[in-house]
Length: 185
Image (cartoon, rainbow, N blue to C red; front, side, top):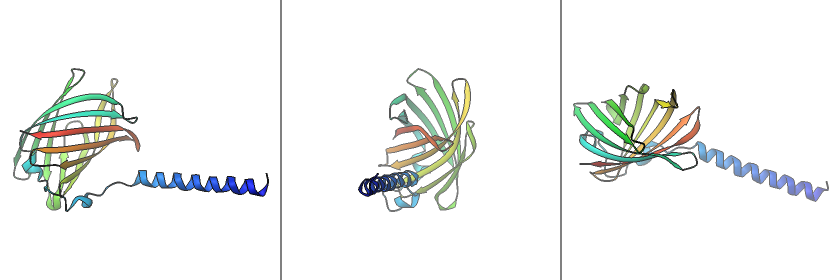
């Protein structure tokens, strides 16, 4: 191969490496909860998740295809810094599910939570209009239980509406996303 062709191939290889490196670094970066500190209205979980809420959502696979649609009716109560979020899911295939979260509010906008199908304790942080929630869910799939990690982001739009987007991963590999709209009655 002559010198000119080697330089062209070498330049293209460097360009490709630079583009791939940028894409990989971008994929690894995630928003920080502090990015939302100045956003309004300020989310107070004890106020928003109090009473009855309706939610409408979809699960999309990693290609973006909607795999499952669902609705949720949530009955939420708080006593001091302890909250119960009783979620009743109805899926598009007619199946139902119930999850009861038990939340605890801590200093500095931190929250912890447990539920029967959550492995360990969920960890959350609120700032401005946002709440970020990380947990591992024991998810029934084809007769087996698979543990998947959720990176769950909620954004308060106004006193009645909150939007939620959660990335689902297994061993760091993206499986899909859950998108929800909450409506406070």
